Length: 329
Image 1 (tube, rainbow, N blue to C red):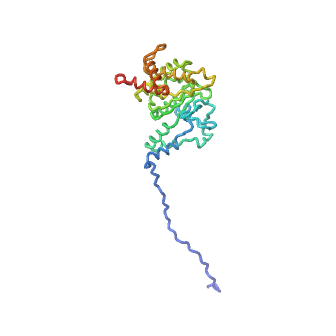
Image 2: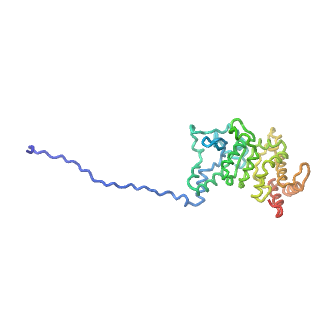
Image 3: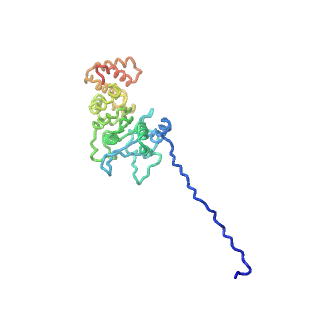
């Protein structure tokens, strides 16, 4: 029996039937490699080059395979631009002690403004070649002692033709930057032998202690440096077809007028000129201590003819004079 009076049935709202619409995912990537080469180089420079500060590194031993590696150091207090290749730079990065730098490990996060986008080198071979030339060619790499630089040269030996600017602060080891025992006794000779493959090197900045450690006299310092680095100097001579090419690459310390620096030839104008003349004579194999050679007379002639010309310009002219068809580098 039906209930009386009849009651109205409750309307149940019907759900609208919906069909699943697949979401469209844009799988296309930005055509980075189709950009003009100039634009890509600008991007690489922005991500991989520090225009104001050098890259300071130190040698260490990898815990994974016990090979020599390099770790980057960071400025403890980032300040004004201190790249040694900046115009008018009087106190560059190689004059700063190790106390000006500190290490960052996994427990201490590196500030973002100090990180380079080196992961770009892992994308593909073309980007690796393009970005690698920008990173190694436009940055200045500095080191505390020869052992650290030596490890860098070994670690990146395939990239050395791309390196254009290097800096070395001290000749010996400082307690704060002692590398592993296997690297402590690295001297200048092996470092210069490997550096011979960096044929495109444009500047090698050496601090005052390195020049003074060669000798307290400019003539002997030039002779000792030639004995340690003649392999590298010969490689530069072959690359540039000029026996005196190293004189443009080797950067001396800024000239100082302070009283305590007057006894150091490496910061005096006369001492640096004497060093360059002696080194140029060794490069042309015409130098004998205590005697005036044909090369010295030729240099004096050019110095009289162009008194306002920088010394290295006279060296360039002499280099072209000595490079003949019969005796070519």
